[in-house]
Length: 472
Image (cartoon, rainbow, N blue to C red; front, side, top):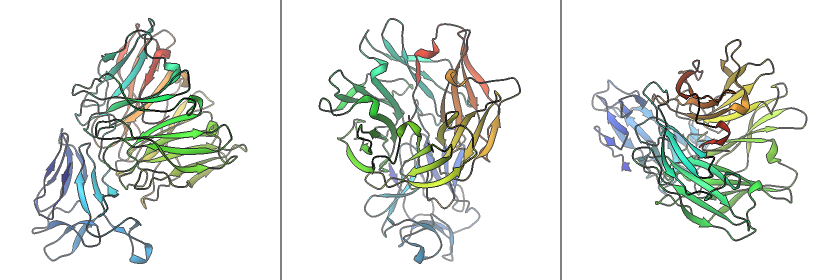
C-alpha cells in the first residue's frame, strides 16, 4: 500500500492502479491499460494541491484555498451538508491499496470512504476480472480452471492449474467463494469443508501470477459437531476495510435464530477464529427465503451484505446489513419493496458497480414466465446509506432466444477493465456444448447484448462445474 500526502504532484502506483496528477491537479486513478477508473475532475487549476483536511476529509484545494473537490464526509447532519459518517475523525490518511482501491481512513485506521476501483477476482492482476471454476472430474479427482479475459471482455480458453488426487475432495461437503484474501491483487479461492464428524476447516488456494491457483492450505478448524454444513451460507468481502477479503457465514440454527459470523483474513490469506455480530431472533428470518450478495453498498471501503427477501404474501424487500470497522455486521436496513414484482424463485441476485460511480449496486436476473430473461439494476443511492433505488430493466433477451436457469451460472466482474462491472456467465446446452458469455455494462447501468467467448462442443459436463463467486 502507499499513502497520499499533501503535495500537488501526488503519484501513487501499485501493480495495476496508478493515482496521478494529470495536470494542474486532477487526481486520476488509471488501470494498466490507462483506462480512467476515477478522477476528482479538478483540472485547470494552477497551484492546486491535494491535502488531508483537519476535519478528516481528503480534498483538492485551489491556490486561493477554495475546495475544488472533497470526499465530503461529515460526522453528523448537524455539521452541515455531506455524507454522514460517524467514524470520521481528524488526522486521517488515504491509502491506495494493492488491490486498487483508494481508501480514506480515520485516525484509528478505520475506513470511511473508498473510490471503489478495485477489480473483483482478477486472477492474473492485469486490471480485468476473470472467471475460475472448480471442476469435479468423472474419475473423482478435482481441479481448478481459469478463464482469463481479452480487452473486449470475452473469455479466453481455460487452463487448469491445481489438480487434486482422486477422492481428496467431495463437492457435496464443501462450499466455495472467491476473493483476494491476502491483499496482493490476485484473486484467490476459499473452501469451507465439512467432515463426517461435523467438524469444518477453512482452506485458501492462493492465486498465482499467471492466474492459476496453488494447492489449498487449511488455516482454521472447528471442533466436531459445532458447524453443520446445511446451516452455513458462505460469503466473502473486505468486511473490515483492511484491503484483504474476509469470510462471513450466515448460520441458521436449528432452534430458529440466525447469526452472522466474520472470519477476518490474515496477511498470508488464512483466516482467524470467527466472531459473532448480528443475530436475528427466532421466527424473524428464513434463510431459504433469502438471496444474498456482497459489495460495498455505502462506499465506505468495507463490504456489506445485501439480501433480497421473499415474504409469504408474495412481496419482496431489499435488506442491507452494513459492516462496522471490526468487520461485524449491523442490524438490517430496508429499502426497495414490491408487492407486484413477480416470482421470488425466478429472481437471481448479483452485485457489482454496474454504473461506475464507485458504489456497488444490485442486479437481478429474472426468468420471465413468457420464456424471456431480463436483467434489472437496483442502483445504490448517492447518499451512501446502503439502500437501493427501485429496479430498472437493463437488458431483455431477444425474441426466441431463451436462457434456461438451471443451465446458467453467472458471475459479475469488470471483464473489459473499464471500471464498470459486467455480467459473465457459463451456459450448458442440452447437446453438451458449453459456452462463455459476457454482457458489457454501459455508463447508465444497462447491459449490451451478450457476446460469446470460449466454447467447446464436448469434453465438459456442465453439472460438474462450480463457478467461483464472492457470495452464495
